[in-house]
Length: 354
Length: 276
Image 1 (cartoon, rainbow over the protein chains, first blue to last red):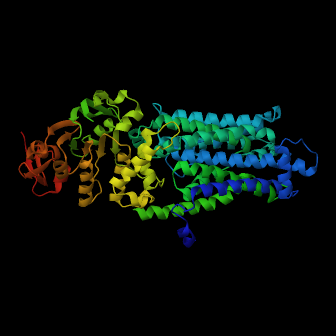
Image 2: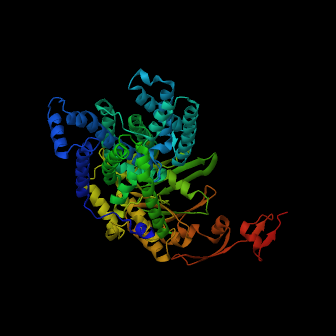
């Protein structure tokens, strides 16, 4: 174990950056095609490409089984997996920068627990029948209200200080988790309980084309906005004082970034449930590959997050087929051991410095 | 660039930490700020790089009020080397120095040729070019301090603010960093702990005690045994006449009204005096 840890690349790997981006982008594209073919009914990659090409070039809907499975069921789900993974990883990278702590994640600020409260209330009161959109809307409102409360309480004279943010976020996370458990314990319907547990751990089942556009648009926009501000993000990591010395309005920038994170995480959580660990480990992995410079690590974070969650979802829907595992179980099984490895490697690096 | 600190007072947590301080550093001059721990040196410096807003008085750069010009504008003129904590984000030397260009960034955060040239120049001046790709956390204390200086220089400042730039450095590195700073054609305001260094490198020395300016002027006039004795509670002997000043210091344990410095309680030679 120790030997493995010591061999972890603590220095940036000497792969040319454009090559790395190209390789990851190609991996993502290939993964989309391959993952779309995998499932209870296997579809060869060649056929998948044919079907996708047919539709993407404006061909009409066919009725062949393979075509329905690929175009109607799997493709939107695979795409949503990639979008959700990219969004959560990106949100994680930003939160880590904002609170200046590389072990933070988007859920640290109470976002997912807030979303859970919204979702659980809908699931137990049975108002889910009102429409397919009720659950996402409730989850999104839950996430944004939670964040609004945390930001309101953590800010002092308009300033957001990292330690206060973390403390308030963690405290409210527990409060919201308590509310969720309370509602969960109080409901008699075991079907509702099942649904709630599944929602809490996250999952992409039931994805269709209608689910995709909003999260996709938000993730793409957020990525673009953040890349434009990547250098300032680097300066923000130095803290209030250095930020002031470099002419940066750190207070305003934190607000702007946290609103972006709220929107990003809220939209993703609304359609996927509380998928954990992506936001924590993927930015880490990106930093290990290309270093801490946000201009380099953000694109890598987005691509890695997409590939990671896409395959976690494939595992979630195939491992116990025809049933499905909650995707959060997979990200935890893959994520925790990895996280511990990173922590140990960081611990060693820290000792070297003192 | 001339710096005018004009009747500045700063409140922190309801306490007046800087009380009516006025100090002028003419263009291209080196001013040292000396004083005991907690006398307000860092706080006063923070007012010059806009981390603390004075509640009274003004700070002016070439006669322009620091707080009435845009943040990025002010930051372009003022380079800062401050005491900094490690954050766990492992930037390389080049990335860290590049952050010094932040106030010059346009809307899309893209570097121009000017930006790159300034970064290369800052690395070269501080002898860090060959460390450019190393991570800052891997460097020694002296090298890290040079990285922070290089970051300040990368912004091409006309005023350098240094908060104990020689902290944690061995004697050679202390001299190196101050030589480097003195040879730059910029105005310098530096908080220094070492009276020797202040006397050697500064054109003006300003002495701060409990938030007030006690004395200011050329080292030979200001760093007298009396002033040093009062401000630092030490017995000082000053050697050197007109040229290089040297200081021999011993803790002072004369206790007026039986109120001693905490460290005197265990000293045998403590003299208790009653003012009665």
